[in-house]
Length: 114
Image (cartoon, rainbow, N blue to C red; front, side):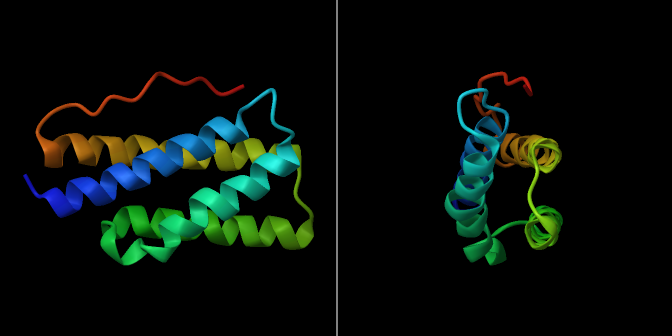
């Protein structure tokens, strides 16, 4: 097992999962969910993006650029749902890669978008 890869992918999966939960929550208002997602989950991943596989890094950078564009035009509940779907796709790919690197399935609870 490549521990550095596994740790990096696990860190990414954890942050992506938390971000997707926030963005699909019925309890957290969408404006707050977007801000917290960006500040606490997307930025830390981007701070360490050189440790991530290239394809995942590129998708995270796309999500980041998407957030910046939406932020400049005005954030919306629809964008929160779009970003959640985008991050869930990256999470799925990250989890798949983590399973290959670690040699066993990573446990993540099943989620459903709100």
